[in-house]
Length: 319
Image 1 (tube, helix red, strand yellow):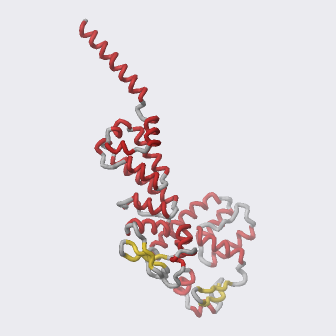
Image 2 (tube, rainbow, N blue to C red; image 1 turned 60 degrees about the horizontal axis):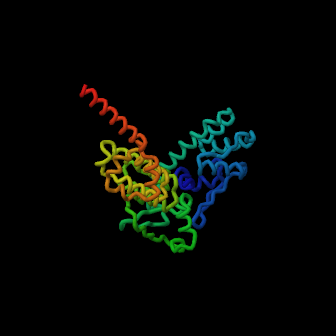
Image 3 (cartoon, one colour; image 1 turned 45 degrees about the vertical axis):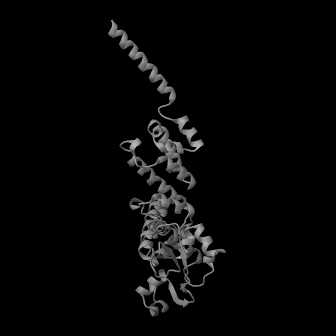
């Protein structure tokens, strides 16, 4: 990407003439571009530059040597990296506590660029998924870096890893909308869950691809859906919380399962009158009965109190 940007701004003659600060030459090789930097840019320094480009932080320790810090700052200025210059200056001023927010901002910005430039774009793609009969273009480098499952698929003994040319990989049992939500998360670290019509479907894909954070995000949005669906009257709500609990357990969504158990327990009377209440598994039934609200002891005390009140009322009426 960076070498492509260089050739967009400068001609190849400019790049190889030594006139461009920091760069000696740019040469094409098989399936890659070789960029030779000026001799005054040390390997150790440029590694920090690459760390910054990949992660949003140069991984400079708070007690980094002054010379190292100055070198990173100097090279950052050469390559017009204003945010990295700011990070170095913050460390110099002992205000490095400001740097994490810069990293967060940059990662969000990179995610937005990744979405616009590469998400489902045919340019530079080297793998094509077929979902719901439609082609979805992707890039192995991104997928293998973000997903251990994808890494195993494209670098191990799976048949998908054996193809020399671009190969179409079928994705069964997934809708295009749900798969695109997963793919957007892998490219951008964000997913369009607010507009998703099938959060359980996305949760299933997230679990299959070992994307724990995406699983957690789905759990949060699903729990909000439960709250909305039950806001008026739980007994008549269209959502099946017991079924959701059983599904959450299958999909390793522990937080969602815990939420469902708590929700059923604290609304025990209403749920006990719903037909799906009988579908509670034995362990979950024991949990909600133990943690039900109001508890049985409270109901017994309330019953005794009401009887006493009624008794006194009858006595007053006789008198």
